Length: 178
Image (cartoon, rainbow, N blue to C red):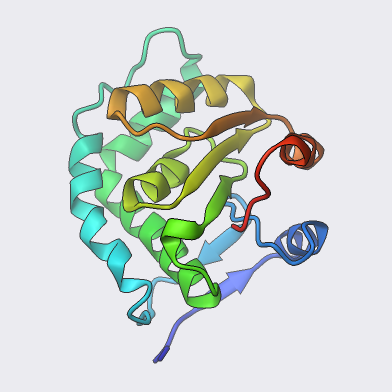
């Protein structure tokens, strides 16, 4: 059972949940997880992936040729603090699994507003069934694509655009569960 956790969700998250007929669209842009909680056993299988993923991130050069300066600067910051951010991503995914009826191996996840896509890449690394990375900024989609290749973590799709573009994408493909 859940012993304790802190979790706050913005109004945008509720809008997106309703938008997808109560299928949850997970976003590191709109979901904020608290730092103190105890997970149920179903979500505890995220923790063993934290250190290996953070270590894998350390192999990446923080300045990827061909990306705009902002993407590289932001990536450098994330990589410099890779363990810290990986722990946050693990908490977000663990909280999602606590509230989900699905096992991670059956979840189709959209990292909405992904930036460099590290939350989505971490989810795929942890064994989520399918992961799609979305950002409105084409430069961040290019960065996420490159990171996917450099980390050897293939994701199932990259979507440039806003929520309407995500919805249109999934009218033709799998509907997300997260």
